[in-house]
Image 1: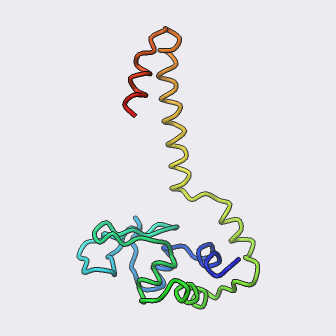
Image 2: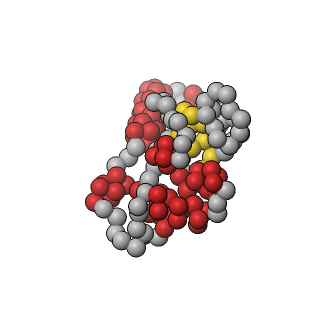
Image 3: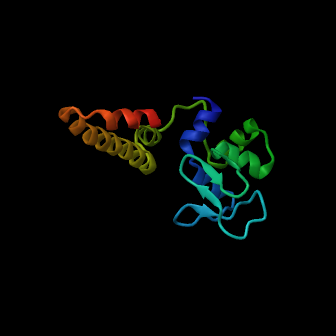
Length: 143
């Protein structure tokens, strides 16, 4: 793994933000350090961050780069040093398992897509059986 892959897999954005002094609450919101923020507008998820006020967004390496004014390579090196990561060594088993597991948000998004597909095709199946396909054609034209 190279330096960037090691940093992104071993450290999530929330851990990086908390280490570098961004106070993230239970719902993942924080005061944005990139502008004068009075109300939490920075969403810090496991795989990314996004500020709804100033539009700043990215992954853990982008966060470190923007916080300290570093290049992406220097930010990845800083993360590796601060979290004691070695890019030339193979990742530990715990990190490999972490990569295979889906985050809760990813699992919810996948479940939502599946439910929507089932509901859509379940509702149109009755129209196909009855010979009334006009609803299906209208739905497809709206897309």
